[in-house]
Image (cartoon, rainbow, N blue to C red; front, side, top):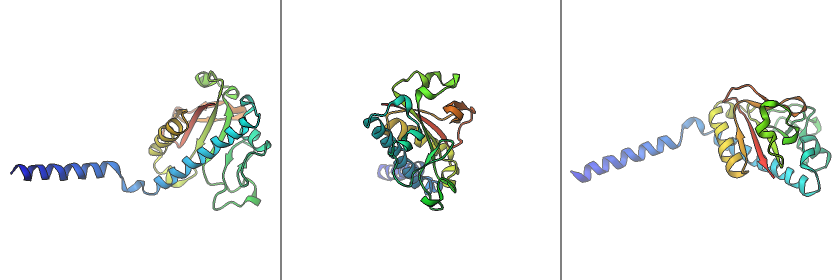
Length: 193
């Protein structure tokens, strides 16, 4: 009888572990999150290259990365200034139109001008990487998982940054804005250099 009871407990434990680790609806999200992680590491590499080539962190922005010739061919910086990588529907010749992928903005923390961002502005030798994943349908279908993964796994564990997920975005003149709304596919990562 003890063998039978322990077998039942082991089977129930295994089923609980399996169902708590994987949701069937996440099968499309996980590969997209890995792509976002790779893109964030590439953007951080752009910043490292910019700083190693003599660029000042105070002048760091998506436009500064483009103007110093650091971006790989195919990476786009539009007029907002946002940075993104070409998607399947966008050719390099099309410029920065027709974008349907992850959107990045990069700026030094000194450029952050909003009063609500005083904690971010106080980190002088760091930069802000804004990540917007809402244009990707698979990631937009599960925004809580997306934001948590980007904030905890990528920003904090991989890039050793500090993540903010409460609907922040960078407006004109790199002013940090907050809509006080979570689960919208937007994350700000403050990374020290």
